[in-house]
Each structure stands twice: as structure tokens, then as C-alpha cells.
Length: 256
View 1 (tube, rainbow, N blue to C red):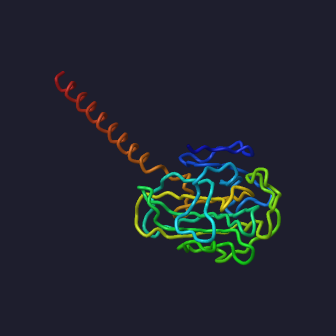
View 2 (view 1 turned 60 degrees about the vertical axis):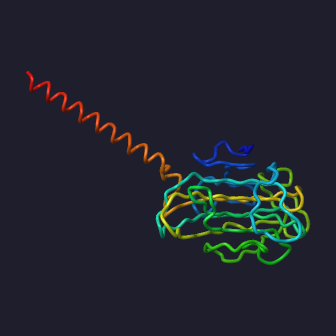
């Protein structure tokens, strides 16, 4: 069963977002500053206290296998064809060479089926960590297109007891970058983010995410599709009651 935890933030996840594993909300903390979106907090997920079998992405190669992790799914939102889905991300890892933890983000349709892979990151001893090696290729535009790690032992509270620690070469963080993808067809969608340990459960990794927008609007400001339908039905019901009451008053007046 999934859970949500955040010892470093008083705020909860945005309404309608769900977490399996360890997710939270934080302000600037350690190596993770506030994002270019200009918000005072960001959301995060971590392998620290993650769940077995959670956070893995199909099609990932390499020697070893995923172990434990977390996923975070936004609320559902209405997307029109051609509208851009955009967000900022920052991958942070205390693991290094030989233990290739990774993170990803993908777009899901109304039935929860993956539509597009929007971002990948993976621990590597050298070179680019975004997009992640031996992972399916994202179809979104990443800015920058290729990102090396900013090396060192990253201090970041969501890493738990491994904050400020490092196992071998490859530890660090990417800094904030952006993913942008245009929705192919109109429909109901959600964004899902995952992170997993690889081949062991030691030395944690995580992902910070912020500024999720659809068509330039924060999804937090977009009503749930079902909410709009209920509002419309309620408004129609009130109109029917008003009309019936008006006709009844007119008939009563005519009889007098």
C-alpha cells in the first residue's frame, strides 16, 4: 500500500496527486534550489523508504535490476491537441558507479495507459545522465538536451540518511532542466513520475519536479474533468428548478 511522507515540509501534495512510496513537498533545500518556475516549493520523490517493485520503468537495460522506489501521479487534466505539457526537473543521487539508479516521467491517458515518455535520468560514472543510458528514448524536448552530473556528495533531505553521502563516482545532481511535449490528441491525461534504486537498496536517489503546466496554465488551476461535469449538471438542475418554480407561480397567478 502506498503512503506519503515529508518530514521537511508543512505543505501536503497538491489536491488530487497520489503517491506510492515516499513523496513530499519542500522549499529550497541543500543542493536543490527553487526552480525557474518561480514557486516557493516543489514536489519530490525519493527511493529512501521506497516500496519494493515501485518506480521501475519497462524497457530499461543494463546489468542488474530495479529494487525499490516511488511513483507520483498528478491529478487528471483535460488536454487539447497541440497544447504543450511542460515541467522542470532536477535529478539527485548519492549512488555511483555500478549502481545505476534512475528516474523518469511519462504522460498517461484516462485509462492509465502510457502515451509518451517525457524525461529520463540515470546515474552514470561519466558523461550525460539526462537522457538516461540504456533507457527508452524520451519523445519530449529537453532543455538542455543533454545534461552531465554536477558531481559531489549531494546534501538534500529527501535522501534520508544518505544526504551528504556518496558511493563512488557518479554522485551529484543535474540542476533544474525542462521537459516540453505537445499533446497529440485531445483527451484526459495525467503525468506520472518515478524513481528507483538499481541492483541494491543502498545510497538513495530522488527527483524534484516543479511548474507542471498544460497550455501554459498550472494544472493545479485546472478543475478536474469530473468536477466540471458535476458543475454543469448542477447548474442545469438549478435552471430546471427555477423554470418549474416560475411556471408554477405564473399558473397560480392566472387562477387568481
